[in-house]
Length: 127
Picture 1 (cartoon, rainbow, N blue to C red):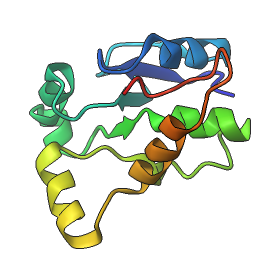
Picture 2: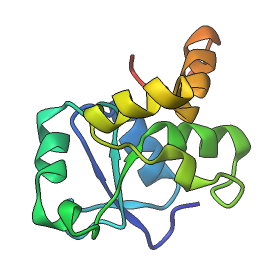
Picture 3: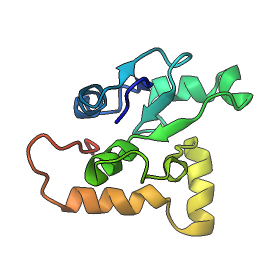
Picture 4: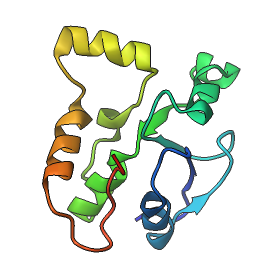
């Protein structure tokens, strides 16, 4: 599923997320060289460092909510999951979006994931 793709994982992402990525052909890399950057928490210090970086300010990197991986697992496909729905903006931007829209798209999925009983080995957000 993730063959020839690399990812960086924030310390906020549960180990199961890393394992799912690797098990499905992906590799890990530093955030400056990874194809994908995953975090659960926009306020986590390692994620904050990315938001404060020149690369982020120059729109060279994007951080994604790690629930993207959960959606890929559920659908057994990366091609049927729109990654744009999983952009994880800084916390202040999330607050503004919530004020206008009500909630972010992955928050609906997060509630469903937490409400469901997960089968052993399935990736969860760790919340």
